[in-house]
Image (cartoon, one colour):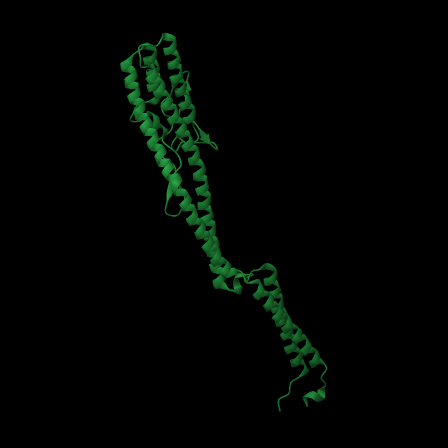
Length: 296
């Protein structure tokens, strides 16, 4: 006849109590933390999914931050280009006023000074920096693109490299402008053009004024083209950011499904585990009341 000893019953009861206590503690931890996985061994596959999606979220966040940075820098660049265009337009208007023989020398001098004022405005604008970065110096962003000795503006001090920033895994955006090709490129040197234009107005040199206006128009076209490129990039950024936001939400949903638990389900499981523990304790108590005669 098969007989069960008290030691066997005690060991089995103790094992049941420990198992239900561990299950109850695990359920309590899930309720308090909201996480289904407390350590990778709980569910290696889900843990791996969580790690992968967290890495994806971090990468997406870096692109979103880059998108915001590019947007801020390009808005500054766009504003600077608008200022330069405004200065060129002012110089053209003043030069047109000076293209007449009826002005007095004093009036010519006043017009010439205003033209020279636009040169100073353009010099100041092109040397704009944003958070310590010169936007119009190419890759050499730590130094001003132009310097000045007296009234003479230097040649371009930057380089022709355009710095780009990745705003997604598949696209990047230029965040600097080659100030050399912008103001001293094909149309000519805008600073020298403005000096010559002011001199032509002072001297009543109509041919010189006409030549200066042609050169200024070339620079104007150059700057507006550059601003158009900046504007196109700015227009594309919101759609890119929306796509990044959608990617982040999708990754976070997959992470949540792998790592987190429904609070209602967690509470239900904790209640069931608590009841199982109480039942195991009660059963163990009943077993301890039995005598030797119960097993004979």
